[in-house]
Image 1 (cartoon, one colour):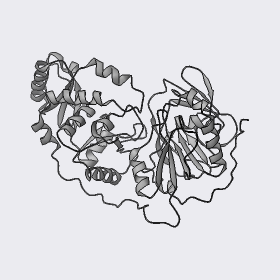
Image 2 (tube, rainbow, N blue to C red):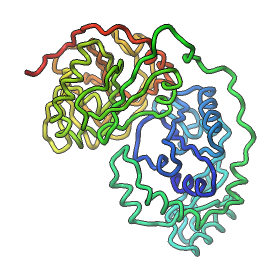
Image 3 (spheres, rainbow, N blue to C red):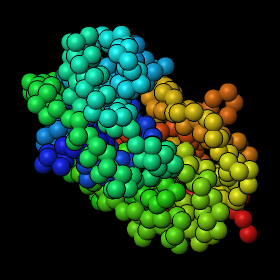
Image 4 (tube, rainbow, N blue to C red):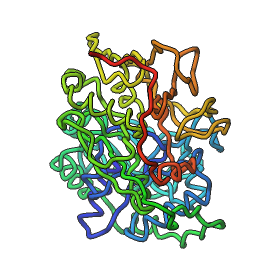
Length: 430
């Protein structure tokens, strides 16, 4: 529904930005196709009120419409158990609330109880115009709020979306079909009336300014990006570039070496288990990453990226593949691990990136299990299983950390030191 609404607005000549209400990586990237810009993130649990306001105001500098996608919960305040709250964002940012109601829930005029706070309704799974107008009449009469649009049920599109791997860009044909379907049922006058809100209050505190010139060059950060690695917060990469970093991408699947002059390698989350054989076979990249670490290059890896840096990776089909062997870990993909969960953690031990003894907030990836094969610095663990480890200049784990919300971007923008040989606590394959 969010992609359909965004695609419809873009077709009407509007510039749209899409946000997710939780700062963690999730499903296919439909917003990128619908709006031409990847999804950003607002998170009431990770980010302060002023940080959320600044992020939204920055989006409005390049767009005139913002969609924040999430789920309303019964709790009023965000907590460590719930993570980011869409309800809290609505209060912080004075966002109008559009809820999505499945047409099956309102069949035969059986209208569910009205939510506490709602400004408009979108109907999903419409069979025909007659059903839409019937539900529209019932909702507006019983709830006293307008039905501003809807989306027809198309099982072919829904099955195509379900089959897409996490992080995959949604095909343009699907997003165009969704937008065309939405255009059949939208009520433009009612939609425009809902989103016509007063100007957003200016943040009461200025943003931390880490973009000031510093002595020395800012680092070159090499981002692993291909079909196996796609889990990144795009707003952070943009912020790093504005802060002076040079961002380059490379493919552990297809390239033979780390980009030249890289100071930091960032291996994001993704579906490395889908491509485990190809990743395992690219021995040139394995050697390049190990040599990069030996020379003093800094490496950070999350989720599937951490599994790739380990000694072995066991995919969901049970096959064990040898990996880079920069971290003495055995990684196993768990299909039924569940969605990322919010955690508060305090790193214990020294490393180049995360401050010791400072409590941070993040989302923990539960689809990977890590087993430590040799003693190294364990920064955090859950039930005896490592979730964040470090050795020498390599940091990896299962935390999805929004470095902007955690105010950790300066650590990634420090002037690169002269490369020096460093040892890592692992054995190299011959």
